[in-house]
Amino acid sequence: MLSSDNSNQERQSLHGNWSSRLAFIMAVTGSAVGLGNIWKFPYMAGQNGGGAFVLVYLLFVFLIGMPVMMSEILIGRRGRRNPVATMALLGEEEGGSKHWKWLGALGVITAMLILSYYSVIAGWTLTYIPKAISGQFTGADAALIADLFDDFVGNPTAVISAHTFFMFLNFFVISRGVKGLEVAVKFLMPALLFLLFVLLYYSVTSGSFSEGVSFMFTPNFAALSWDGVLTAMGLACFTLSIGMGAIMAYGAYLPQETSITNAAVSVVVADTGIAVLSGLVIFPLVFANGLNPGEGPDLVFKTLPLVFGQMQAGVFLATIFFVLLAFAALTSALGLMEPAVAWMVESTNYNRKASSAIIASLIWFFGLGTALSDNLLSEFKFFQGTIYENVDFITSNIMLPMSAVFITIFAAWVMSKNSSSEELDGHGFVYKIWQLLARYFAPIAILVIFLQAIGWI
Ligand code: PHE
Image 1 (cartoon, protein in one colour):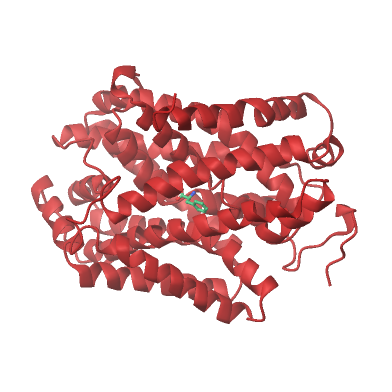
Image 2 (image 1 turned 180 degrees about the vertical axis):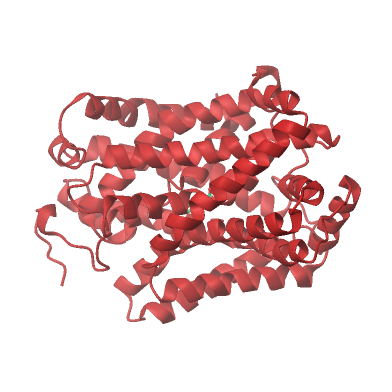
């Protein structure tokens, strides 16, 4: 039984605690580092003109992402339940209202919608493993690599099968509980990082490195629209896994004595570092091969295989790379599914296995829209474009930032200073900064950018 008293010191999570601070950091990093860093960041930076977008993205990561992440962890740890129950409980306890549970619910739904397309892209990654093993990249030029990709995404059966397989993997792991995964994250994340450095070496020595770097870091604000600014903000939330209760769900298992600030800093730095690193690998290759940086979601799949094809031991390295990327996608996907599964286990009669199966099937079904966006339904466009573009826009650019606003409002305005300072240990400098950013800067900045982008300001 969960006790419903006011003291969080005695409140325990139903699902147990992380074994250490490092385990928590590993799990949150596992959730944060994924396709967002390696697939989404480069393609979006490329589509939005490079430098200015990257700069704005970095600012958002630190000025909005960081305080929101701290708020989410502190709310999660204080409530120690799934995001919906935590928001209901703390809403009442902190003198607000139990209707705050709708904020938790919004997050759960957002995460499921994100996973619906995330799983399709993870499926792309999975199919690149056999392509790598069978040496299909070896010696291939840009045109051949592009054909390889286009042929694949143009085939609905292939894309849906890969999506199905990935959702099944998710179901398989999550129905057993995510414990044990932390060990894998501990080894596989550093391995991914190492491979990125190997690729970086390659792109420094044989790509158009200075052109790539200058594309990424020379801000040209004329190339950045308000829509681009909104996209950068959505991307900051997305890569950090904030604004949907995933971090809240993980915070519920965080031991009381762990410093939330330190944990948040480690995760934010690691996550952003990997995104920037992957941009540094990809853009020089784009320019060296005369490709278009604004290519879109295909960018990574049309650049990296080129390098592997030219490298010694390229077959081996490409195989490991796509395995690691698929693994990184899996650990993120689990973070997207955990809030919904935790909610269902705690609030219905279904056990973990049944809950996981039901949720995975629902997500799989929604994912078909994205899976068909490059083939059968590629001409079916409305609002922002294809089904994928709409799901991505609505989740990343509207739902995530909106939840982020309410999360900071809850943590910094509704929760008593006593509660928040107890979780963030103390009234020191760091607490003051957090308060300033979470109370004023983050919610106001998000709202202004949002209103600008939809043309109301
Ligand atoms: N942050 C993950 C990525 O960059 C995606 C994600 C979002 C995972 C939200 C969990 C929750 O790929």
